[in-house]
Length: 378
Ligand code: SF4
Image 1 (cartoon, rainbow, N blue to C red):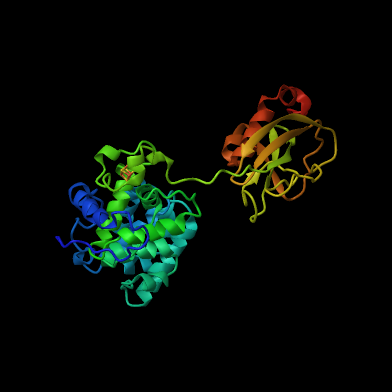
Image 2: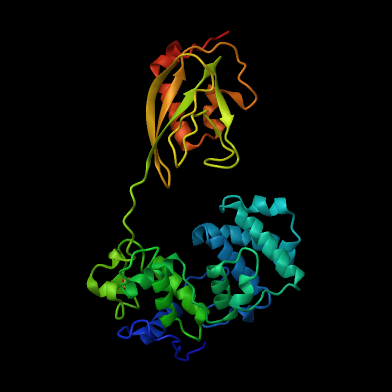
């Protein structure tokens, strides 16, 4: 175990802050409390001591952890490394097999990047670059992943800032600037406390501290190894950090969805691949989007009446979606851009939430159920 005192590279961020005291206190805590994880070397050891395959495991875990929790990642990591124990094995895998194994871990774009990266490393001889800059050149490796792999797999000093570290550091230094603007200050502050020695352990210790002690709500300051240094902890208001920018009022949009029912089926369309809820099955609508209310006419002529409205919050706007029900549908000719879907199986249509709630409105609507939509049984 490397017991040498870590040295601090940058000291001019906050002269009054005890930057030198952070790494020794944190590493001492990590030596006793580090989580045991399948991709992790024991505290105080260099990950590459475990063989040339270790960077592969560190990289794989970091890519998986970008989207989900440690507990959720462990079975995926175990299965991936069982099926593809080396970077070469993963590089040679069928795309479809990797995509299927990734299901449940979030965006498939990351799985595609994972394969592209594995193939790039395999094509270059099978060894990962051992510097942050070299790692940045690989497909899908952003600033965070490159820094984390450089530090954890290769022991390089790198400033590793994930969401946990962001929270811990903004509290340690009581950084009053709101996120996301505070990210530069948080990174600079993290730089001042990152040691030259044991940089990988330091990064993992910060992550562990953020996940077990310096948690978002009710941080456990009494148990924290950094309580002597921590400004937010001393202030008695650690939860005030990181400061969040006041939320901008979300624009309010209005739109209409159209319920066209015939013979126990409802007309559903496939949304365009590009744009909101792209490629998903939905009720036809009037073209509402994040920037404008809907304005398009109903897909067929006839008498329409309102069956109520649902409110739905999207990330960048709020939508009030009014459900319009057709009073009498004759014939089943609707054009090529949709399908008649059995109402009894509406739950299997995979409707996005806002349309699923609009559909519930129609199903609960007495006018629709009692013949307002002229549901004719033959
Ligand atoms: S003292 Fe409290 S707020 Fe400060 S780092 Fe520790 S747990 Fe977080």
